[in-house]
Image 1: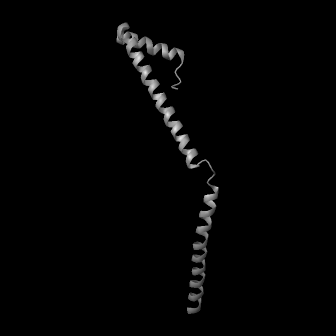
Image 2 (image 1 turned 90 degrees about the horizontal axis):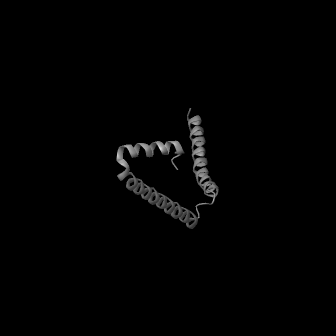
Image 3 (image 1 turned 180 degrees about the vertical axis):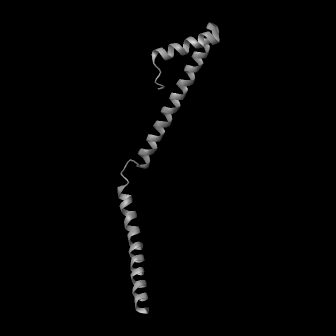
Length: 96
């Protein structure tokens, strides 16, 4: 999870032993282990919930079909704007 190797972990535990002493270190390591366990359970629960929501909302389908519909809705107004520009240029040419 944190990419901590054996020697890094040994160094951390050695420093903890020097700083905290042999009486308090086991309790603190145990408490830290419980926090890590709780964080993992929470992360797994959130991941499962998110996967269930994706399946239930059917979001795993490709979005290409929606993009195709959006493109067709945009093409018509763009073509109308082009036609208006053509009419405008013809009117301006006749006035000149």
